[in-house]
Amino acid sequence: MSDFEKDNLDEMDEDLVVVMTDEEGNEYYYREELIIPVGEKRFAILSPINVDEDECECHNSACDCSEETDVFIARIDNDENGEEIYVDPTDEEFEQVLKAYDEMVADDEFEA
Image 1 (cartoon, rainbow, N blue to C red):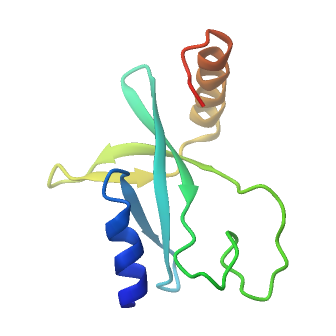
Image 2: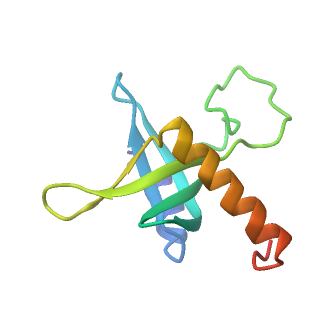
């Protein structure tokens, strides 16, 4: 990670930064925006962090991206050491999280 990236991430100390690595070893940074409990499980709403000023939110420097940023939903589990890990939810869990989010918005419990 470059010094620029570290400085940007250090500035976000109030936000929880989640680092995810793909199969090719590329790291992607996300900000945990919201936790939504569904039953006994917790799900995080994650938005991408643009750590490279020359890249758009889709992490493609050749892109002329002007669309809204996608957010991701991840289930928060604990690994064998008790550390939190973020994993893809099942399709059913994904639908439950969307429903819970919609209910939060409808009940004015969520502040944008």
